[in-house]
Image (tube, rainbow, N blue to C red):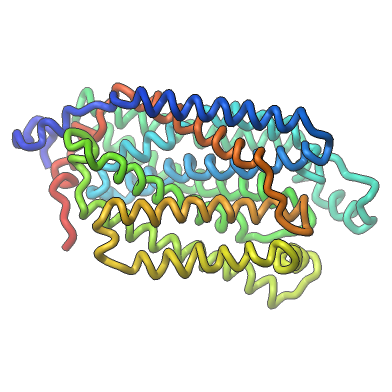
Length: 411
C-alpha cells in the first residue's frame, strides 16, 4: 500500500488530526492521581503497623494492576509488529500511548521498595515462623534476597522502557520521514523483544505477587498474571475507542466497527485464556495435593475469601464469555465498552484476591486506602500517557499499511 501522500481526499482530515484536546482529561487525571496518592500517604502515616500493612498491600494491588496493563500494551504492540498485522495500524497509537506511561511506574515503585519488609515475609523473617518455614526461606534465599530482588526489578523496567520507547520513537519518526525503514525496525524489534517481554512480566509476577506468600510455588502463576493483564489492556483499548467515537477527524474517524469487532474477539479469546490458566493451576495443585501448594488455595476457598473466588469464576468467565459470544455486541462501541469496564473491574478484584489473603487469611478487609491507591496510581499513569501523546498524530499517518487498515472490513 502507498504512504499517506497517495491517499484520497476523504481521509485527509483523519490523517492530519493530532492529539491535542486532552487538556481537561489531563488535568482531571493528574489531579485525581495526586489526590489519590496523597490520601494513600495520609492513611499510611495516620495508622499503626497493622494499618501500614493494609495500606501497602492495597498500594501493591493498584501498582501491579496498572503496571500490568501498561506492560502488556507494549507486548501487544510488539506482537502486532512481529506478525505484520495490518488491520490494527489505526489502533497502534492507543497501545503506544498506554505503554508510554511506563516511566512513571519507576517512581511509583519506590513505596514498594520502602515497604518490602512489611509486604514480603522473606525480606525480614520473623521469629514467629515455624522451623519448617524458616528452613524453606533459607533454601530460597539465593533467589529471594533484597539485592537480587532490586537487580531483577531494574532489569524488568530496563527491558520494558527500552522496548516501549524504541517502538514508539520509530513510529513517531515514521510520521515525519515515512518509508519502510521504520517499519522494518519495528518489526525486528517486535519479534526479537517478545521472549524478553514475556519472561520479565512472568518473573515480575513471581517477585511482586507470588512472593507475598513465599512458602507457595506455582510455575504457571506468571502466565496467569499476564493473561489477566492482556485482557484488561485490550478492554482498555475498547474503552478508548468508545470515548473517541465523537471525534470523527481523529481516532474516532479512523476506527470502524470492523476494528472494534476484532478487539472484541481478542477480549473473548483472552477471557478463555485466563480461565484456562486459572483452571490449569487449580487442577494441577488439587490433583497433586501437596500441603505446601494446597495451603494457598485452602485460604482462598474458605471463610470470607470463598465468596470472592466464586465471584471471579462467574464474573471473569461465565458472564463476559457468553456476553462476548454475541456478534452484534462486538460491533457496538458503547456495549463493548461496558463489558470492557466490567472486565477491568473484575481484574482488579482478581489481583486483590491474589495478594490480600497472604496478609488477611480470615477474609477481605476493604479500606478507603485501597480505593485511594487505585485512583492515585491510575490517575498518574493516565496523565502521563495523555501528556506524552499530546501534539502527536492520532494515528500513524505515514505507515505504509495505513490505507489497508482504514479500509479494513470483516470477511
